[in-house]
Each structure stands twice: as C-alpha cells, then as structure tokens.
Amino acid sequence: MAAGVNWYRADLRELSFVLFEQFRLGELLGKAPYAAWGVDEARAVLEATDRFAREVLGPLNASGDREGCRLEDGQVRTPKGFQAAWKQLYESGFKTLSISEEHGGQGAPRSLQVLVEELLSGANPAFNMYPGLAFGAAETILECATPEQAKRYAPKMLDGTWGGTMCLTEPHAGSDVGSAKTSARKLPNGKYSIRGTKVFISGGDHDLAGNIIHLVLARIEGAPPGTKGLSLFIVPKKRLGDDATVGESNDVAVGSIEHKMGINGSATAVLNFGENDACQGELVGTVENLGMSQMFRMMNGARIAVGIQGLATAAAAYQNAVEYARERKQGPHYSHWKDPTAPRVAILEHPDVRRMLMDLKSHTEGIRALLVKLAWHGDQAAALAGRDDEKAAYHRGQVDLLTPLVKSFASDEGFRLAAVAIQVYGGAGYLKDHPVEQYTRDAKIYSIYEGTNHIQAMDLVGRKMGQQGGAHFQAFLQDVAGFVEAHRADPTLGKAVELLAAGQEALMASAMTLLGWSQSGGLGLIGLNANRFLTMMSQVSVAWLLLEGAAVAQKALSASSLPEGEKAFYAGKVQGALWFARNVLPSVEASARALALEDASALDIPDAALGTH
Image (cartoon, rainbow, N blue to C red; front, side):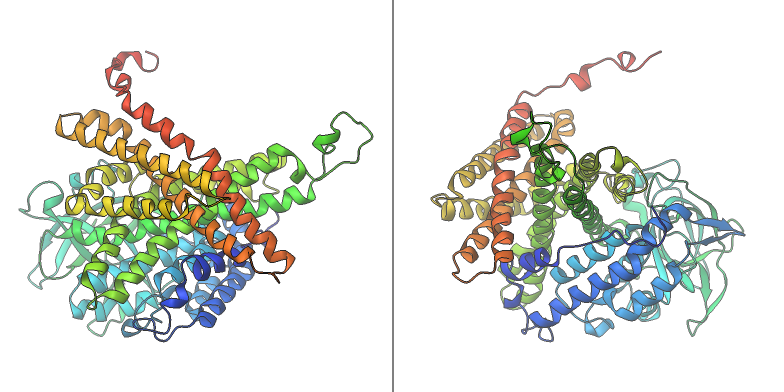
C-alpha cells in the first residue's frame, strides 16, 4: 500500500442517525449542562472530524505502520508526520470536546465525543493512542488529585503541551496487578522516591510533547500486600520547577520498545524508574493506598476507548470491503451460474459476499449503537444530577454494567470482522496493497490490553451484575422487556422481536445458573463460562438496539416524499436488524443450553494430557 494514501472512509449518515434519530441527542442540547450546544454545532463537529481524519490522520496510518517507532539514544522517535498531526489535532480542539469549560474544554455530551473518537481512531488507531492516554491520565488527575495538582498538571496534558500514560503492568505479574513490586519511599520534601520497572506501557515515550506525565502504581514501604497496598503517583518524565517549567531528567529511562504484530506507530515501552535512585513522584491526592480505585477511574475510560477502537477498526474494514466488492468483477450472477457467456458481475452480487457484508454491517452498526447507548446513559446522568438523583443513579448503573460488554464484545468482534473483510477481498485482502490486513493486525491487541476480555467477563459476572443487589442488571432486563412488549406485534419486526424475547429469557436463565454456581462453590464453572455469558448479553444488547433503530427507520420510511437515497438507507437499517436477529440471536439460546450442561472437561483433563512431552 502506497505511503500517504488515505484508505479511511466513514458513513456520516449512519453516525447522524444513531446520534440524532435513535438516541435523540437534540433533546439534551440547549439545556444544562449542554446549553452551549445545538444539533447544528454537533453535526459540524462530526463533519470537521471526518475531514481531519481523512486528510491528516488517514494518510499516516499505513506509513506509520511500515515505519514504526525507533529508539535513539534513549528517546523514542515516532513515525514521520506524527508530530505535525499532533499539533493540528490539539489546534482543532477535538480531544477536549467533552471536558468541562471549567477545565478548558467545550462541555459537549459524551455521546458526541464517542463518535468523534471513532473517526479519529478509525483513521489511525496507533496515533490516536498517544492523545487518548494523555486525556485519560489528565481526567484521573482532575478527579482524584488535589486542586493544586490538577492545576499544575491537567491543563497542559489536555492542550497537548504534555503527554500522559498509565503504568500498571510489571514483568513478573502481567494482569496480576496486586503482585506489583515497584516501590515508593517517602522523602523529606513530601515526595516519594520511585523505583521499579513497568512493561507494555503504551505511549511510554515519544517525541510529540515536551514532557510526559506518567501515572505509576507503586507500593509504599510498609503498605499491605496485594492491591490494597498500592498507591498512585504522578511521575513526570522530566522534573518540573515550582513554576511548572520543564527541567532535568527525572530518572525515567526507556529500557526498550516492543516489536509488535500491529499498532506499530504506537510505542510500547519498557520503562525503568529510579535506576539511579533519582526518580521522584507525587502521591495522587493526600491518602495512601488508594491507587487501585484511582487507577480504575482511568481504566474504565480506557476500556470504553478500546471498545471504540474495536468499533472503529471494524467500521473502516466494512467500508473498504463494500467499496472493493462494488468494484471487483468476477463470475456471472448466481442466477446464470451455468452460462459461460453471461457477463461478469461485481462480487457484491454474489450471495456469500452479501452475507459477509451483512455480518459486517449489522455488527458495526449494533456495536456503535451500544457505545452511544453507554455514553447516552452518562449524558443523562449528568443532566439529571441534582434534579432527579434516582434516575441519575439508574443511568450511572447502566454505564457500569455495559462497560465490560463494550470493551470485550467490540474488541473481539473488531478482530473477527476485520478478518471477514479480508475474506471479502479474497487473496487481495491478504496483501499489503489493501488496508484490511493492517486492520486485522492492529485489532488483535484490543482484546488483550486494558484488562483482557476474560477479566472483563469476570468483572461482569462477579461484580457488575451483583451491584446494588442486582438492580442494574434487572433494570437492563426490564428495558429490553419494555421494548419487546411495545413491538412484538409489529408486522415487519414482530417475529424478530420474539427472537429477542427468547434470547432475553435464555440470558435470564443463564444468569440464574451462574448465581447457583456462585452459591455452591462452582467457581471453576463460572470461569469457564463467563466469556460465553458476556457474549450472550452483548448479542442481546446489540439485537435490541438494532431493532430499536429499525423501528425508528420504519417510521421514517412512512414519509411520502423521502428521497431514494434515504429510502435505501432506512431500508438498510431494517434489513440489518432482521439479519442479526435471524442469524445471531438464535446462538444465545444455543449458548444457554451449552452453559447449562456444566461441562468441566477443561478442568478435569490431566495437565499431562495437554500438548506433547
């Protein structure tokens, strides 16, 4: 694939539908806390972001993948063009849309920010990780640090002057964060001497900003073992003077950068803190041993961001696959397959290609709706805060419940759907002449970092479903049931809605099975089936939201003077929902039957029977 070529394309009509027709964002705009925003302003932001994504970030995606990052004299150098793109990004204001005006942002709804992030990440996921991590670290400082720390660090992290990271993983521990050995020793000046090694640090070093503010988990001398004894520290790459001017090195060294399968434009670093016993950090806030709860504020945002990455990659793969299928001619139409003289047709007309494209279309549109639904809940909670605390609590509970679904299902499907896109291309998709092979390589990491997808599944079944005595999960089921009752008699959608009802019942039965295991010591069975359950719940959620969108589309189709392009768009929303309901939803019932079998063969097999010896 030629360097500098933009392969990225997005469907702004689809983004507009989800935001303004399905979730009716306009009803929130113009009122507190979004009084400064209207529908026209939100549309203009999407159009401007799309233009930036295509003209600036998209052309750097393939070239950044080929060039990668390099380590020179202890400093990471990012691919050509990244520095200029970083400057343009922050001049545009795209990264601070949903930050409050109080902190230099624009106070936009999160549901708009989600789609802006989809456009940026879809065009260049590796580049977008750098500002994304800085944003997450700054938000954590704003929420958890002292007012003085927030004022000292956050503004420059939000305007691109400084970058940011989160540093959890250590060489010996992996996902077992509680085994962290990085130490913190209190100094007479009130700061802490930090010493240890962190690995797999995304954006751990780069040349895009004048400083990098690392958020580092470490254990203060004498603190309890495990996660309860971890504290979070602000550790700048370069020390700051009293007036926040950047000074000398803070003894943070890049040990190496990883050579990876994908996202090669994003530097993944090994960071050594305090090799010369000269690394100093500040405790986030004033209370020790709160590191995990503080870090999870950033982790939850990062997990949603990974879900956006999965969606963005799948959507980009889908748009490219459709375009290729329209242009590539091969074989006759299936109705004339025996006629050697029949004209060659675009592969778009072949049934199996259309099946794959419907797989891509329905999943990407459904996952997008799920992400916007989560953000919409957050927007509603913010709008209701102080006015109706009970409803605000309901919306916050749905954000908590849906976060593991968004991270896990979107990332799993992002990788799978990118591979489906390769299949649409056939052998051409396996070549670097086209973008889908890179999409597939980039997407594999999404199910691994920011908490593996099994961690997400265990978080769902072990924590999120039981929160508030199970109230959040029950509210979710009631929301689905309410939609079923309202639409099961629909002449077009009714049978698909009945499939949704069956899937919901299967999900409820499986939830009760999980509860029984938790009460009878069946923890091994929970571990074996947690991922399956998360997928089931995700499929029910996506089906619900696709059918909800189809109901909106059906109403729009009843208009008498609809242009042909709009008729095709709305018809596509209906057919996509029906395809998902008929082809994916039945697997929820099948998964429930498999779960109920209580198969423990993976636990029962002898260790010696695995692999060769």
